[in-house]
Image (cartoon, rainbow, N blue to C red; front, side, top):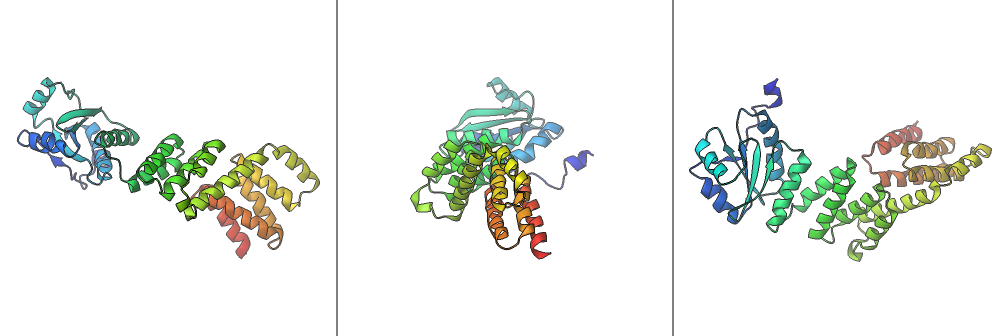
Amino acid sequence: MTEALFPSSSPSRTMEVDQSNFMEQVVEASRNTPVLVEFWAASSASCKKLSPVLEKLVQTTEGRVKLVRLDVTANRPLVSQLVQMGLPIQSIPVVVAFWQGQVRDLLQGVQPESGIRAFIEQLLKDSGQAMPVAEQLKMADSALKEGELAEATNLYAAVLESEPEHPAGWAGLIRCMIAMDDPEGAEEAASQVPESIGGEPLITSALSSLKLYQEGRDSAGRIDEIRQKLEQSPDDAALQTELAKALNGTGQREEAAQRLLDIIARDREGAGQAARAELLKFFEAWGMADPATLAARRKLSSLLFS
């Protein structure tokens, strides 16, 4: 079981330091590049959990941060010296950040990936750097997908701080505001998009999502009224479409899509064409990987090719 959890087939690529090279590889090296020292022991299960996550995140900095490891069991005299100097490394794992020859910060115990990432980002900030934009975008997109909206917003903002005309940064920020049901924030972000990138596909897609969100939000308060009208005219495509927009505005994506699919099923031409166009707007707004999009696309394909 232990071997399955901690496979030996993936050896660490992190440099090992000891008494002989600690000053050179940590203290002196940190005068130019921030250095993280992972204090660990091969017998510690907690260290084995932390090490691969730490190594992965440091690799995403593309050389902006250096990571080394010190085996506390094999280097007891050095550990004792460091403890006497005030480093709280009696219990492991501990990660100590060095910058310009001094201890800058430390991380104790096993932490969630988000906590380790924040620790590294702060070290980069302290040294006048930032995570690579590509990595920030990757993390932001993942956070948005997982519903971690505050984190996603901060990451997209960090992208724009580095590259003020990055289309993915602005598009992501607008989508975050939409997901947080913050129309004023979404409109504010949209108004600040640089004119030079206004025609970029990512921007136009995000703006389409914002328009759809605003339409749905405006209609959301009339859902009961629209349903009552549909009881009298159940085949009214215009009312069905209006209800679909209202349902989408309240986050009821599956039912919103189904309303439009029902129109298409009854009439592939005419009203069905308009419903299909509206459904495609939904897909664009939700994202092609969204579960509601995938489910509705399968149903649409069945209707069109049956």
